[in-house]
Picture 1: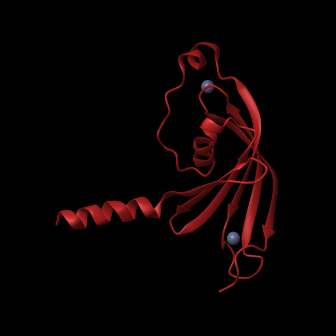
Picture 2: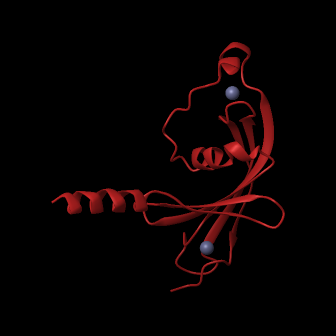
Length: 132
Ligand SMILES: [Zn+2]
Ligand SMILES: [Zn+2]
């Protein structure tokens, strides 16, 4: 009985969430997420490293845990910083090119990591995952 509950919890975690992190040669952080069987890759650049994962999660809408703002942000407002995020959604189409990459200019707070604004810069289909 207990084992079944634990298995249930584990599979629930695997269905939605961060499955991997790597750092590319030019210093960007690359995060892999799976949400409802859809594979997402998010690359973050130009944002302080400690908040990259949080920004990636906010960008694809899975971070519903409200982070407490820092006291300074409450008093003085957020300290804005602009970075770049690219979000690849894999296997969106059943025929090639199957994957779509969205590039955003993201405005975040350097103190608390809050994603304040996102502007879609480009969107294109790419040959990434094979058909079948
Ligand atoms: Zn802030
Ligand atoms: Zn792909």
